Length: 130
Image (cartoon, rainbow, N blue to C red; front, side, top):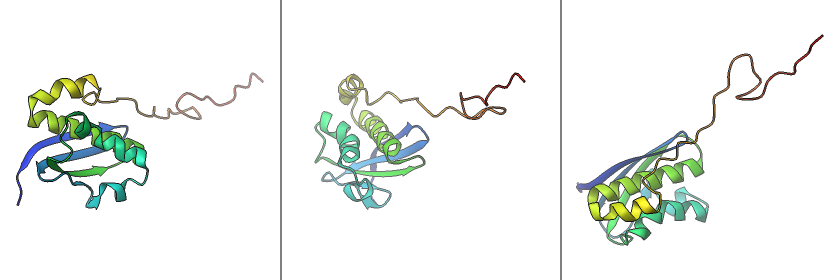
């Protein structure tokens, strides 16, 4: 069994990603699948790889990600957040480059909940005076 060098938890919308960084050759696995097979869109693959590119660690480590909840865009952003945290835990010199690119900041925008007596979160039922 290989030892985890860095562990990070990333969140975005309703998605949560647990990221484990290990010694290796740059293979990224998401929920038991290869990164390009799990995320069909190239944009999402690039989002997940961004922290590795910034810190020049693309071929140094293997990354194992468990992600659940939300849609593909939220999951990709959660993976990026968790990977950035794990790389920061691995080496403190990565902190400044990851922070300046905004990968360590949790994007807290979420869908507002629906309130009772209303049609939606903000939308009201039609007002009738008579």
